[in-house]
Length: 125
Image 1 (cartoon, one colour):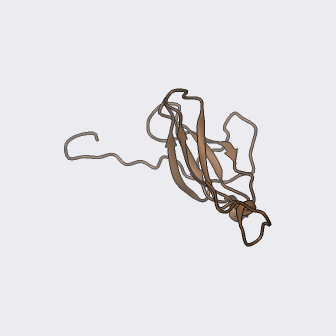
Image 2 (cartoon, helix red, strand yellow; image 1 turned 45 degrees about the vertical axis):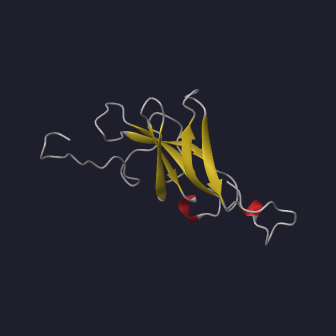
């Protein structure tokens, strides 16, 4: 809030406009299905998305790089991909005791589908 009656709203990232991996190796991934956010101990924002690019392989996680802390990311970096067929990343949480450790919740991996996988364990997170 900039005052009692005024709020400033900005677009933090845009998958079509925000540069990807600026200053790092390029990625073919595209931010196109974001549905969760996570924040680490330093205030950095991570964007968790469903299956990328209409594929059946699990979702991507992006690191939003806001170098000047103005609320607009200068780039989004391809942090990691969930490479399990049919899975969906549903959230991410950092360990408050060890800020470099994190857990990603994953649902619906094809390998746990009891209808298609013999001796499967069922849906898991």
